[in-house]
Amino acid sequence: LEIESGFGSRLATLSGTVQVSGHVVTIETFGARFDSFVYFATDYGPTRNLLGRTGWLDHFRLAIVHYNRELFLSPYES
Image (cartoon, rainbow, N blue to C red; front, side, top):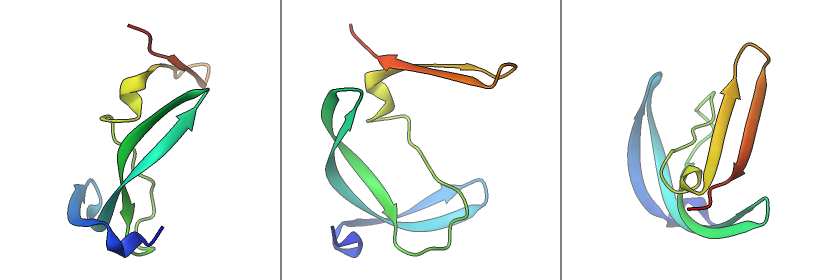
């Protein structure tokens, strides 16, 4: 995948802005397979990972139990 060949954009984050390139990729998680539009940073500047809630997370149920430091993830079945 040539990162820079994708759809160019600039995203605003809590720590500033980051230049990104978007691509349609196929993601498989826990046996669920789907296409999603994913943005990749065009340089190594960001010190944190970014995860959008539209696309990948729409296919799963997510539960966080902060006190126990636990994360639960299961496929979303409507």
